[in-house]
Image (tube, rainbow, N blue to C red):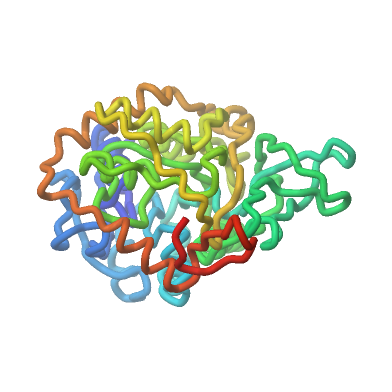
Length: 391
């Protein structure tokens, strides 16, 4: 049955891919997007299908949101600002756009709640803060510790809150406590919890999808606060080494954008038992960020070793990879794209882009974050940290 879908943030990286999939199955799609210049140079939605109905507007504008919801059956809420580093500087903006924008959308949904079959909200791994860990003596711990004194000494692994032994990372399930470590993480937690709480209170069937590290074509290459794979691809195409924080041994779970799109479609079609639940959207496999940098460089034909900087950013975590059993059981979904396939797709797309249109702002962005004290580099000689110093 043909549905009318609204995709907030639908002109962006994940959103434009989701719009394509919805159109391909015959849905009528409306996109609500502010076309933020940082993600859309010149304010132009490069990847949005012409068959989609584009409404340019701000999620914080109640009247614009109400109009965008007219005649809509299903809402896919992907709109918002992304990026841990930038969020530690633009604190108010991230909370305003992500949390207040979501609250504005929800008020409009509540006003005509019987109209909507389902709300799907894009959450994120950042709601967890650090991932799950186990201690050799105390088992699974509720909260791993990364004291500033250890980071200054370049001791990166979290420690047990009971015995201070270093911990071992394990797969993070949806029941893991939500303790975000950045403004972005707090805003995404608020987005998710607002949607699930209001959805449950007003009988608007709602599903939250916690994306892990999403990568693939159409990510904003010139945005220095986007996903790490896109930032590194930008640097590599300019002949620069990928910059890796800490020691590069951080474990992450990278999922291709096409699998994220499939998860949205599965959530839309899921049984009522999935309502008001959150699901990890990930591969269930981990790789270190240093290994990923090497694989991406080889795939792009630019085997430049990464720059393991020894720096660390406030708001970053050590390890997070997902337990995906809940999504497999309740949504009938699992990732299908291997890391090798996904990186090859990203590399081919980046290579097809015009080099003149790809601007590397990462060095400037990192310098600004150093000046603000968000990026710190420990002195191996003194054990003291001088914000903005170089390794």
